[in-house]
Length: 128
Image (cartoon, rainbow, N blue to C red):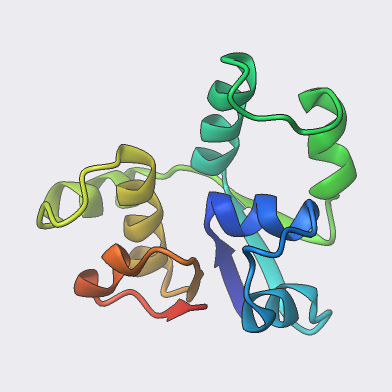
């Protein structure tokens, strides 16, 4: 199964945070599941890292190849179809990164691993 990882789920998984539920950790760690990370999440991480709001324990240019190696993690590009889906979303949730993740999950028909229950009104299949 393909799984789109929310930014927090990704960070909590690689940092072995107790904030990640056992279900979240299990589905992400399962080698039978294909992990998908949006470029929107990497953009969000880069912004927070550059502002000093996120400690990755290593430079970002090391974090990405270390924790998102090709073949183990698929990077999801931001496509026009995703942007068009964003334009049709109701405004239950205002965070632009999360809205793009919602649109990508809906457009690609991928479950989203996230703790954010504000995704639920959009009809996204959320695993937590």
